[in-house]
Image (cartoon, rainbow, N blue to C red; front, side, top):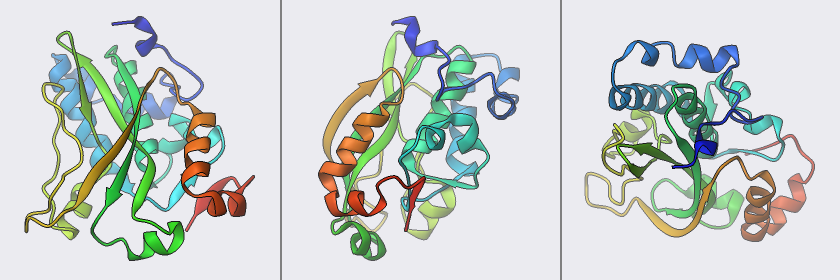
Length: 212
């Protein structure tokens, strides 16, 4: 494991007061597994997931900026978790993917023209000599609303988005894996968004945020 996945960066500004406050409970725990579980649950449920706020600027993707919000995009929540884990001396990195959403997509499809979301943000966490994937995106209230099992994570097994809801209806599908990244690849995120939603990208080019 390379120590670069522990580094503080502009985006993972974990010495900021906001991220230090985020990890204060986890700091009191003994094992890294306990710390991972505590922080994952805190990020999962303290920020409501919203796919309708997409950042196009460096400031948008700064962990301390995200921490001040009440809701966040999946990439934003992934960045928060990574910053907190690195602050706890636990290696973590961003993973990007393309997914399709099969439930409650009318508003999303009206804006994007598709039920495919790209890029989608996940987190890779290094524990006991292995990398494991997790998605802190869907808070428990949202899962209850859409009749989906809530995801838990303690670093020992992959925990990614749910393929089916509790009625066995298709919920989420992973379509493409864009790989993992040492830091937030803003230019690459923008290029993925542009390739998948060219007209929307033109409309909001130069905007601070895309809000639907």
